[in-house]
Amino acid sequence: MAREQTEVRELDEGSYVMIEDAPCKIDSYSTAKPGKHGSAKARIDARGVFDSKKRSLSQPVDAKVWVPIIDRKQGQVVSVSGDDAQVMDLDTYETFTMLMPEDVDLQPDDEIEYLEYEEQRKITRS
Image (cartoon, rainbow, N blue to C red; front, top):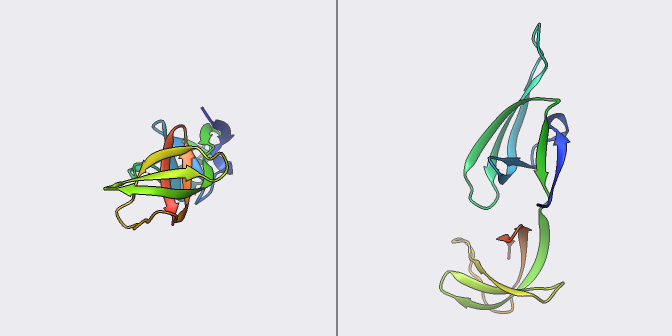
């Protein structure tokens, strides 16, 4: 798996974290002061990168968590068929089929930006 381990205190809004074995983008990050007999706690609210499910995590700030290494890549649309688009990676020239987001209208020869993590892909910009 393409991921690394880091402490919770090093995370911030907009970064990525693994919650329930799914890569998530952090929407909000807050900490509570340490109590009399404990350490500071962090609460993280995040949304799944590929499934858009809301998830939350509450951990001590010195706990270790996994951070996914998500690649941002460039591609070109080769063809469009229904809800699927055949895309060619502009670096490796590999072609693959990916699901088009509902709010994006793609045409052949359009250049796109997409995220990739372990065979999961998502179009971010067209």
